[in-house]
Length: 257
Image 1 (spheres, rainbow, N blue to C red):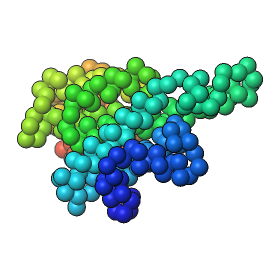
Image 2: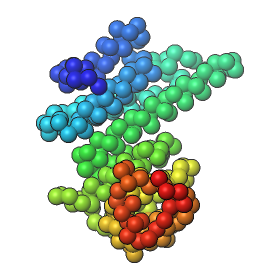
Image 3: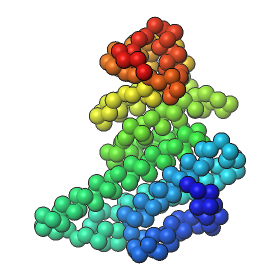
Image 4: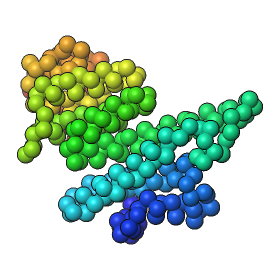
């Protein structure tokens, strides 16, 4: 996001209203859920990218997190209305097959937008090291059946930051429980454990190969061996901790990068 656009929302007294005004200027209803949510999440994504730049100072970063949370919460609260609500979706219930198909299409769009909102919100939890809010967000996503691999990865990154650093917020036992839950949700949602997941799990358990790691009943060493044996590929650039762990334990990948 260009600095001029980011500054527009940073300086606006009510950023959510600023997005509504942009949507309205485009010819859509000011509170149209689809366009409001899509535009809002684009802005939130752009602001987060700006916040995570190394050159962004701490006060600005904190202000961005606050704005992003207000945008995401607005999207999430708006989406709570049922599809038949004329205030959000101009599509009354109908026996017409075309209308039913359109309704299903709207539902798919809404589900996608909500997953994006959850992902952005979890990223804020990670950056603010707010494990309590991260757990609540994961609970809500599970209840609404919108758990995604991106959400789970950011949740595990939040667990790692909560376990380490200057202000440790959870115990090793807590971390094990969180990892165990996340990997079960990952499997139950039909996703596979990729290198990014394995890398953060290795970091959470501090590269201790003998530590139970929350993946079935495996130790960390057994889990990484099984993952590599199933064709897992780790990058020296993107997954340095995992690659170092594999190298120090003699674990070979079936396909070298």
